[in-house]
Picture 1 (tube, rainbow, N blue to C red):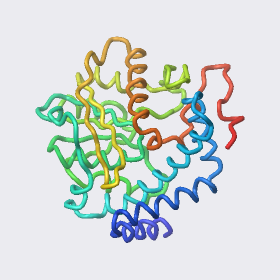
Picture 2 (tube, rainbow, N blue to C red):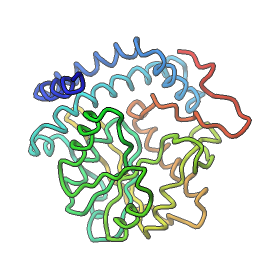
Picture 3 (cartoon, rainbow, N blue to C red):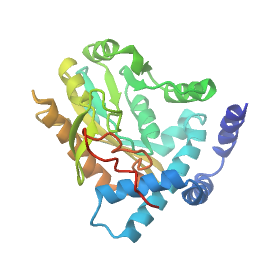
Length: 294
């Protein structure tokens, strides 16, 4: 019942002028930064690990701003997932190497966890008629799960695949000339992970799925970096990565993290710092979050 009321409230808030909605989101973010102490500590620890040379005051500022963007983008789902197509088109812009969407060459879209990723996920099917596939994990609340799935599939030929379905339907979609929207930049645990550098952390557990799917699907890889703007969102599509994939999945995964680093540096407050990105450690190494303060 509470989930349905929350979704309905977001739909109502989504009718507000965007500046008003963003102001509300910023205020909620500042409140959340004070009240959500465990997540605040995680965000500050991530920033400390990734940017050790940055002054503490600057890390505090980035973390606070990150909470604000988190709340602003969450409230924006009220119009992203319930507003008219014309409204979404007017506020969500796809820019960059749009020619990469032409034709039928299998294509993987590397879409890191910037808070604006759901806007980017709508920008693609709004601008191409190609089949569009993404991978998801089922939410334990069926009402919220349906909301997420319906919102993400509202435009175009979008199919959401459960992680439990395995690799076969993913590769099948690619080989038929589809687009795969892939978000492999979180710490998904020790299974299938490799340890490669990410910022100042030399051994970040990272799944090598981008390299693996590109090889199996004979696909090119482009990146989609989504950012919140005062007018809505901009999703920037990069040219296809040269010399990717290679026969070395470890080197490919390290490159993916370098590409991610470069994107984060351009908009550091908009990345998903509230996730315990470095929770999986090589055997025998200490928990990096145990002594974090904030």
